[in-house]
Length: 455
Image (cartoon, rainbow, N blue to C red; front, side, top):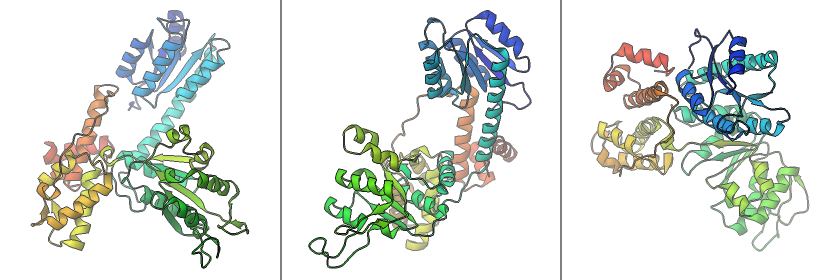
């Protein structure tokens, strides 16, 4: 993070030395760092971490083309995604400007350069970056959230919770994407609870119901509609009137039924099987799947128009392995819960159990952790669940092979992870966590404040 008292750093990536000097002169209020090519630009990015970059797309070894410029843009945004990159385009190069913005560039300017116009764009970029940085600081200040039954202290999951809070009040369809066991139904319930809707939350697992019965479950049927229909029955869509319908495993809906669901989403009217009376229904749709719907669309197994109706807001849920420190946090919660219900003598986790939980990849996510902890609590002989009670075969979680932007950022990532794990292991006990980390209590307090982690 840039020091607020230091001059704002502007990186100018430009192979024209004359224009470099002109820009340095024009921006005397900033610390201007210049680079001639992609290698110099990335070196300067790592060293100075600029908030704003001006980038000429025509860079050596291909100054007349744009490939090198686009490659530089992609690498800058990969290493430091919050950077505001302003690209330079030649006369009439509108397609290049559009492509750059689509890749994540903040804005563009035309050559020959109008210093006043570019100065305005740069100042606006710095201002927006400051606002976004303030918002990030605000988000990071809170290390807990109340969102239905979700228990987390991981930044990865906190981001999801913030998104759910923001979209819940909007009358849009929400699609939750994530592996099995990540808590999609809990998040769907949170969307409903925070939406203000007065009706019921109604859930249906589309993969658990045979195709020939799923239509009747969703839309209902009239008496005599088919053999065995001795009375009229209201479907799940109607049951969720003024409420929320959660379609779990929506990718398993057969194509003929997808057409009927699309018609409901377009017109907000249904007809029961065997009925002729249109029924208006005000139901919000939240759906979930672990399948790749875009691949299914390409294979003709899922309707593209239905996908866009269902996916007005898409929320990707991280796996438990991607949620820093949450495995131990959740394990403690399950020990307390199942200890009270199943084995009152069990109260905590042993150190070797904590090590085993930390080392395991949890391919089945929170559902696997819950089931494993339930079994372990039942099997435990003493007051603590041990590694033997868990019976885990440890697996290595694949790590991201993308290097941090520089050594300072790598240290911060490592510090944050170690502190979260120590706090989780000691149940937020400052003295215990400091002892685990091999530092003093005042040092840990300073680090918690520096990294905006809540004790």
